[in-house]
Length: 186
Image (cartoon, rainbow, N blue to C red):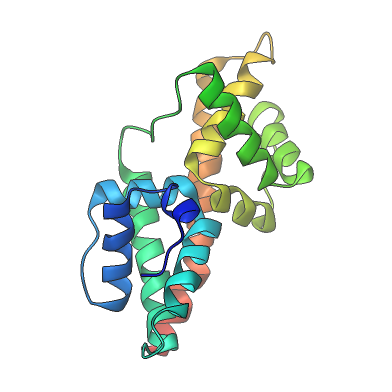
């Protein structure tokens, strides 16, 4: 599907084929692949889609775009509904590298807004929700765990519940406009 080696390293090659097959060949995507896709975020999904589309010159672009949006929404729903969270890297070096990559993909303003909402109250603006879900669940969990470690005297269970609440609300905000657009087009 025309993906580069660096792009393919973000998700397994099998999952990349599932995603491409689902968008361009009416294939299906497993729940595990959906978790992989959502964990790398919407930005990567869009990059993958555009890269694959460049190699599919005979594809109906508007149909492929609609299928790509439907796939993303379906995968977000699957990833969010699973009771176990996406695994966070365990080694210190792996966490550090992943955290550095995550930080590059979200604005300081948005990261601060999410942190303040979780630990002090308030809410995350819709635009920031788009940024947060775009970086993926792994990044959200890494940001949360890092903030939790450096925030003494906090009710950890309450903060975890608020973190989950913020993530779920942001996912709903992202899915909502896309779903209503595709419903009016059908």
